[in-house]
Length: 132
Image (cartoon, rainbow, N blue to C red):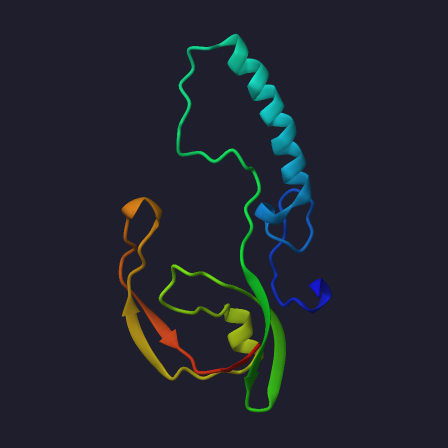
């Protein structure tokens, strides 16, 4: 599946085609550093701990393989399923590869983590067929 992925993302740790959050080497580093933290916490019992940090170091993201189709051209991509999003987004390289033409434009501002809001910006709208 990875050889069919159209993403140009590269891991900063291993230099491979995956997001750094999904890197197995990162998990190994985190588990060894968490052992070091346990030793340091025993030596310094006055340190304050944040209660909103999860104990688990791994984050699992829901993904699904889908086919995007436009004017007879079909490509297989890995899609991230985000229950909290009100929109679907395409990477620019997919828009170019499928030769999509904008079906409209709209002004959007995005809600960010921590309650911030990005400035409104114009985004193009595209229509594409999706097959699971």
